[in-house]
Amino acid sequence: MRYPAMLERLLPIGLLLASNLFMTFAWYGHLRFPNAPLGWVILISWGIALLEYSLMVPANRIGHLVYSAPQLKGMQEVITLLIFAGFSAGYLGQPLKWNHWAGFALIAVAAWLIFWE
Image 1: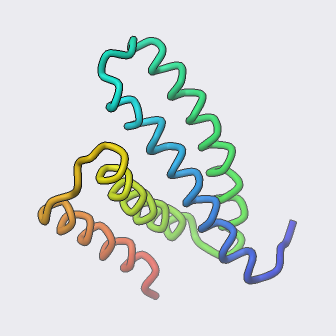
Image 2: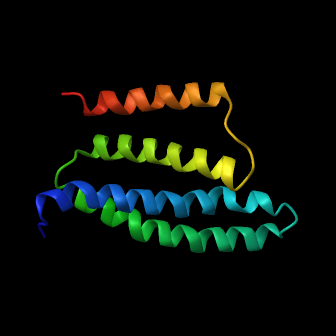
């Protein structure tokens, strides 16, 4: 199925943003609740991850109409880092330090190279 050109370029980005928000909560949200039983944490995280996959799969399917698989992966990594930076500072109360930002910047440069023709 084809979509309007602008939608094919932007919809995957929006879906990747939403899916990464869910996945960040699935992976790290429980850290605010260290006394929660691990079994419950795993089940809740799996439920959240199901929502993430429900967004990630269409993001990649639609995105592959205009982006290569390596480009989609590079985009996803940068989005993950941006979501995580906000999550770490805002939800966990652990703002990133200079070395974290420097490491993330190197990953962003790597993603930029993926898009360079």
